[in-house]
Image 1 (cartoon, one colour):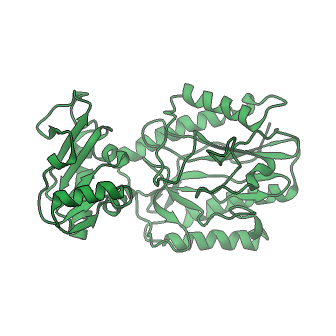
Image 2 (cartoon, helix red, strand yellow):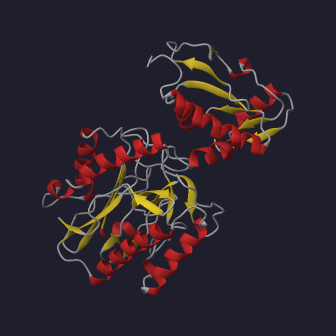
Image 3 (cartoon, one colour):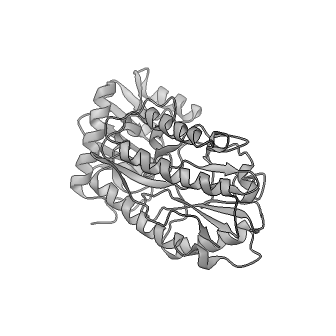
Length: 386
């Protein structure tokens, strides 16, 4: 494959993805969509570049490229500004979720009053069901992710802080081929390489919409490890970067230093039970909100509702889609309108925060199959000692 052509994925895979996008475009009445978001450009082409893509409802893809200058092909035009872009049709889809107000006004002037559609929603729906090619990329990330997690106990040394351990885990991840960067949808979500939570730091609320918090090491990035000593009786929750292929897995495992409280062990067992239950009933056609309600009911029946998905501050979801970005559709939340479809890849993370011990529970990445969810993250699920 020519590295300077626009597309870096197989032609049959391109055809499948474009067919999904155009079907969603027609459902929303869009004649053409304009793509500027890097995750969406990567989905369509297998590469990231500076510039824009247009996709017409007939399936024509054209790249309007600023950089790199080495790309070539009939479907590429080099431009300096968006005013040089041309559009097919009347209704133009724009990425409402990521387009700035300034860019919206600029594009609006270009399309001269033509009606618009929400290209962000179109792309989100198209990307929600993964192809076999994408699932294989995610499964490969899962295998490499798993290998690093299995090494975590050997990385621990007496006297370590959470930051010390996180650095060692990050080193192993990078050595294993982790790309370091992972895409997060939304401009208010930031995280570096993952979240390592020790003891009561897990109970520190964060401004970000993550399942778990942590005060962080600095006010400029208030989430995750904060320098807590890994002391006897504390849990160590590892939720680290799984992006090895451009498609990622999301996986959490819990470790412990010394003996931890019985309540924490019971909560961890409940987390595993919730994952197993949701995986068994998570078939195509099931409402995402029903999965959420089942998880909440199981936590309540176990007498753990006060600690479920946080303690001082609770997260409003227990799972989410994952792929190119760490937070894709569907969302497993009480008001979610999503319905499970075969090929959805979903991270389930029913976690607990136990005061005096810390965070416990697991997170696995699953693919929705006709008979339930298949787990792609296979590290041991029990609490492992450090």
